[in-house]
Image (tube, rainbow over all chains, first blue to last red; front, top):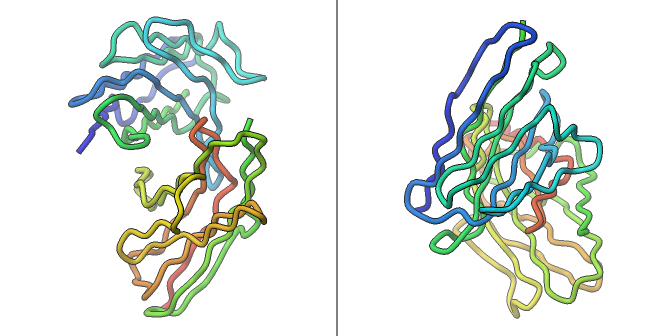
Length: 115
Length: 109
């Protein structure tokens, strides 16, 4: 079945630094990628939707300059949290869809802790 | 945009019994769909079942089935013969990537 590999699974970084999270579709072309953040015991909050080769569409209230999304190829999308602060600590998860995949396939998530 | 609503923050069910998790949606699209996902404590999202608006029959996948009522705009998930491993968060979601608030299901032995 379709697989999305997300790395890293967890990361701890210092306040003010940037962190890049990668999602790779291993056996299908991810024409669409969704990026979410999830706080403990809450639902997934859609941050942005990106289509390969296009600029991401951000949800209202999500800072584009802080959460940089790149979807330059059909197998790779990245989310960069720039100048991270403790309030950015969260669980970030991607999901992808495309030819060869039924529905949406999720990555395993990245737990970001900013100290 | 399709809006998804789950009104049950938590549900309890006895092992081996069936349970229904509610999901309602609001859309003006003629063609739409609903996904159900399970999220155990490990955090991974597990796809369970999908229902398309043009599907003539309710979707079924093993112990999971959907009670799809277009007139009520509801797509409730029915889990039959609950198992302890079914304890998890359950989310209803739209194809546009929007999720309901989720329901925490606890299966009691």
